[in-house]
Image (cartoon, rainbow, N blue to C red; front, side):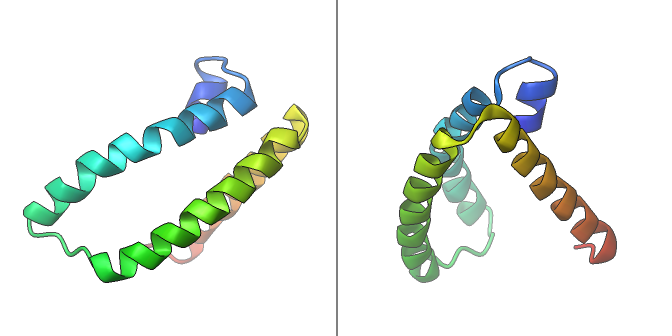
Length: 93
C-alpha cells in the first residue's frame, strides 16, 4: 500500500506511511470477524499478548520514523520490500 501511494499517487513517504497506519485498524476490525466466522483459525489467546507488543512497537516505530529524513525512510522501505520479495522467491509460502 505504501509503495503504491508513493509511486502512483505521488504521496510523500511520511504521509504514505501514516495513511497506511491509519487504515490498519479498520481493516483488521472488519477482517478478523469475517475470517473467524468463515471457519478460519484465529487464536485470540495468542493475539492478545501480540497486540500489546504490537501497540508498544508501533508507538516506538512511529516516533522513530517521524524523525527520519524522507530519503532515508524511502531507502528503508525499499530495503524491507526487497528483503521480503527475496524471501518469497527463496522460501515461498
